[in-house]
Image (cartoon, rainbow, N blue to C red):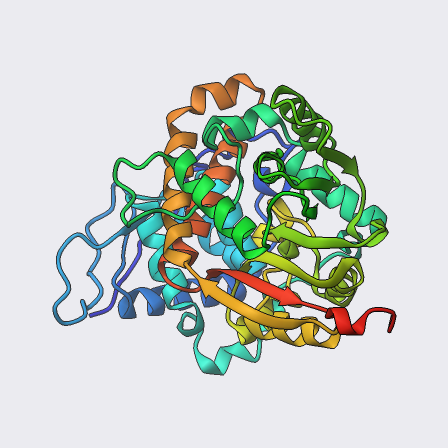
Length: 438
């Protein structure tokens, strides 16, 4: 059966574009230039994909379109992508690919009756959406990452500022009271009535156990967050140095350390990982490698090796993606890199293994639990949507709220489709026998 969508009327519905602040969101407020051919190709790709996927497309007010063929055994209730402005939707995709797909959502030109469901279907079939014959033309739809996003020492500070310095109050609207912005580990799934704070403490305790953290341990944390791991390590008797590039996080982490009565055991510094000195029994870095950038992975793993005392352990929590997909993403300016994590790149397990080995580190532990991240993101998204009035009161407009909703849903879909995973890794460096060899 062929799915057909009605043509958009000339000068048709503007969805929410007239409400977009063009000074804040210039590429959302205006439609991009796109040739009729590129727009038609984008439309054809979407129509072809929908015919093959367990997904519906609907335009409000239009006659119900033919539905895609359902896989054998599938139930009713397919997620539905609702096109408020088909013409704008296809034009944005024709001009800018997946960046256009995201900007179209920010503009209010499409929705999903089950946004995570729609995105999970798309993420699970990401390699099949574009016909093989057209993949060679991929360069026509993608943009190179801007040089300004490179994670030089100055660039990394700017990139961190754009995300993590938005507002501590914003993050508090959807994170649990521990202010932990990384995957929790639940006792069982689905989470049910388990408190998210308890699940976050379970994750932190696993990391500290892997690092062998106890009385007298000297521990370096690369990527402070808002200080929960540092406080928990200090309560075990460790002496903690934690570094961040976010002033907002640093200031709040300092207050939280003081409130916990641990200023004698924890120091919080604005410092790039490349400029940290000393050696430590353990180095812990939770979901920070994603912000490093591929060009600087050698520097990151080299720093881990340099900072570990003989016999020490580096413990990472890292989001990962398949290696081939990572290679494509590394060359591409994506919607996430444009609006959410400038300069960021999710590594593959192969990339981590290769770069850590090149730095002289041995990978001795690797455990994944991506389904726990999907559940964590579900809880964050529900809290964020439930407190939209508070987000608005903080000065974030409706375009930002749609952007953040899409970011959380997009990420959850990545883990639900197994396109993404999250790993806890242990790396070891020099042994005591290597002392003095450099």
